[in-house]
Length: 216
Image (cartoon, rainbow, N blue to C red; front, side, top):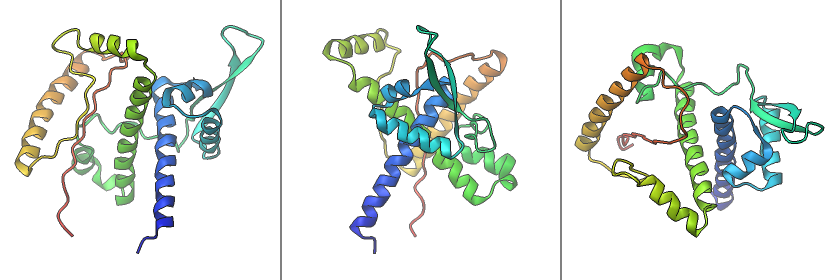
């Protein structure tokens, strides 16, 4: 039986994990950031930000480079980036819709079960990190800015955001939507192979498919 104290410990651990992954996500996305920039992007307090960065540094996951301040060269600013090492965050596995597809069809023997689980959890954590950044941005918009943001987002009928929704599906619906997404993303990736996609404009499209496991 799990006690209330154990529940609280698990909750704090999950909370810490999300913020650590969020910082790593930001550093992977922007290449290098100052502590203040990280703090502003995910809404942490100053000291909390430094606490997480120090933990990541101790884990050999981030590195610090001291460079002159762009407006005052006499002052050095600490810039954080993901450390290039064996512990670096794994890159996206083959740009596939399903992580399982890549593992099972091409590389199953290369990964242990625990590694597969870690890769799945890493993808989930990075998705949560992306949502946290967007949540922080929206929270910081004042009344006028939020209206401007909505008008900008919906300036044509083809702009679908900001939108996020959780949908529960039957087995048949799950299969159908998966097949249609597979067709769409195959077209997109074929285009990218012919034309380099280049750097993104920062727009985010989130997707995820999770099949309900059989009852134990």
